[in-house]
Image (cartoon, rainbow, N blue to C red; front, top):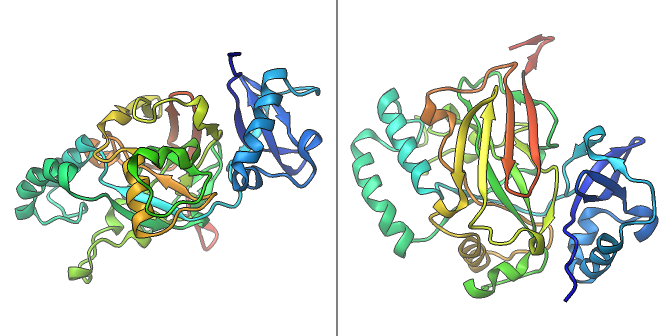
Length: 329
């Protein structure tokens, strides 16, 4: 059987247009000449089974056109628009342990757990992984930016935190999907930095209502995606990828996706049991250890955040202050 050439998809700004492209190594090819002027990455994902053979043939023989250098192009969010954004919380064992320890050290409740309850929370981790369910909430697509766009730090937060993680893009609809079939629904994977305003999560007036996910997770620019959407067939085992994030050149996150409490397949099974997954939906699989809360350091204007996941490319985002009434906060 002939070896299939690995390829990725992306949306790049080309002469003012959001152009759907194929990426082969460091070369970029506009797909519109081959697939039609109306094609987008989203339309391909919506009809994933019919497009994959065409895309693979193009990759195997290289598109008959001049390539553009990847490094010279501005990457836009690969998938425009997305479907639902499902976000897994507390899905890495070490990440949860670090957040609990960091809150103890700071003496606050930004993790949403009272100090007296943290020992029992630690004990619950293994039981949750063995017998419990994932915790998943919905996010806003309005937070999405490209892989090199600026991150705007909200003026009313002093604890803007990074959370680099693996994002799975759904390419087939599913409801009550068995875990052994769940990965068949995945079109491909992307890098996501699911930033958090830590000091907006726990509210004194919320009581039993719990964490304020809207305030904590959805500030404009708090979800850099891409630059690439790599087909699942060219990614391999999603539980064997390495996640690395650096702030100003210093490594902060350095972890394997094998530390997930609930695998990508288990997340899809759970989500499809509660709701329905459809092509274009994005599943954020949770953050590995190494967040700013654990290090006791949060993002400030001027910081540069670099993110990498095995085989999925890289992000570089600069942090800027939110402008209020004509001046930076």
